[in-house]
Image (cartoon, rainbow, N blue to C red; front, side, top):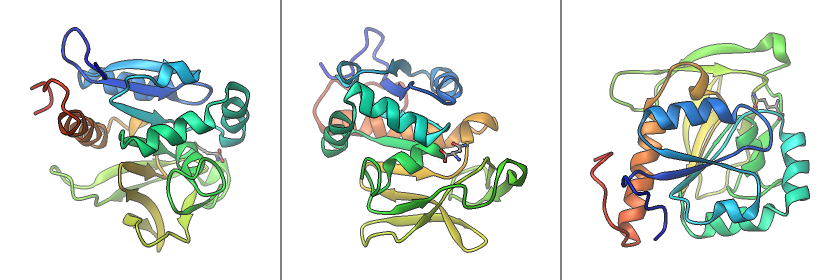
Length: 204
Ligand code: GLN
């Protein structure tokens, strides 16, 4: 049965070819999910959700090609399994990479490493704005009609959603911010319910 763990927890994959997948893993496990590091197409089976982490999008793209992961990742997107991309993960999701979302990412748009910064973003979450860490971050350009822009910095879109895919230019996983991952897990639980798997009360 898809994603059903012995303890009823959600099974969340984290692409683990490169980058800060460990940080996502820690947050997701702290929230009660079971996490599987994904490096091969077979490891995408039965996931309730998938995270594309931050890191270096060029290196990750080479890994995706090497492992034959591009089409299986697109198939996962078509299946409606919730996908969260942060920073380099946002870049992977764009039209020029995996095309998981109808938008284009402008890499290193805010400048180089020295231009990393933090900002408070209102994403409509209980508890107030999100403290967001931007590290050589991309921004979103040219969104298609189905893309909902969720937050901006200096007039540039830094968070967006289209169907089951959410992308963030920043890194909630490194700033002690768990609410976006919690919301992502709620979405994963809803997806599991919608497709008729056994319900879990863990995140309800
Ligand atoms: N600048 C990186 C890239 O283009 C992304 C940075 C990040 O994920 N923090 O891949």
